[in-house]
Image 1 (tube, one colour):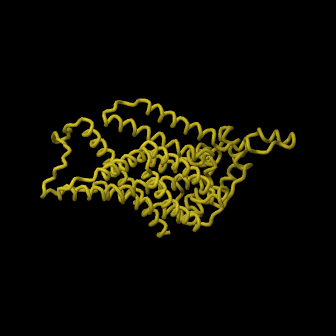
Image 2 (tube, helix red, strand yellow):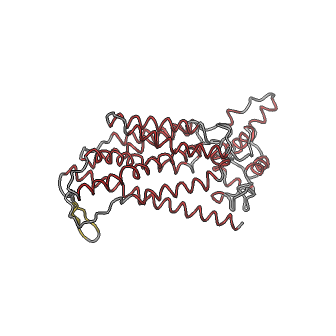
Image 3 (spheres, one colour):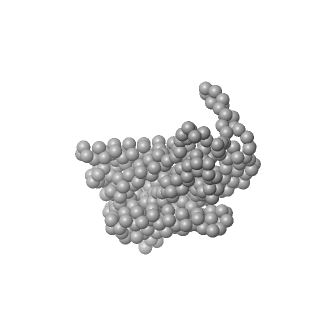
Length: 402
């Protein structure tokens, strides 16, 4: 019991560290890109007002010999985000791969196979992106190729893992790409640039171009990766039959929003069509979550007799619902869960009494009726279509507590 509680606190602090590091990294990266683009577009110094004064910011390639500019201002934030995120993935998705990562209905995997597959995909995702980003094409063609590559990855992942697991791994791949861009291109190129300036050698413009490209790619990927990580808590996104399209549209919407600000900082004007594209992508995500949701009423077999037909329109009793919840849900959603490794019910949701069940009718509808997110695909407590249909009819009748 003590070990389980300690593990929960470790998970909590890892999440806190992950979020805080991400705030620093993303915030600094977006702020620096804005400053850089503004300086280039105005061709003059930039003045910024702060709480304690007004600051003049200028771009200067003539660094005094005694000066020691800080390099890699985003380096440790980026590394900490990746390391804390990977630690969370190991602690939750690897440790409970059968519960969160594997869906036997999608692909029957052993836990070690699923873990190995994730590790391989992190490498493949980075290598595939890196090769496309270095391809001898125009930058527009490279961006299109990277987008298609990521869309294909989203599709493939939903054919390997559970919906929740696919979203998590997709976000981890994009996070790995962003961190690897920092480690392999941005920081090394900064060091080379400073060394060239100190020794009086003209900096390599080709390296500048690569750094600008990778920084801009990271900028466009920052918002989508946040959507993917948050979506793990919302089954309407990851449990939809169209989950890979929803994940792809998150890339489109996030990139469109960032493109608006990039164009604005460059002085290219306000591209309002980007907001229309982002809005359309968001609306499509919502629509796909609705049309892609499971409908056990429609999937249930047709009545075989007149009595069956009458029964199909009569609201189930709370006792019937209580029996289903006791068999399929209470092992986790109890004051003292019996599921190994759980010290407390997930999100504090308890379903041990009729009042608790009726009070959580909306959650049951979202998690067990419309999306099949619960019980988790790997929970080894399969729930049948007839049971989901019973829950759906009970909810449709107003979820009576008696």
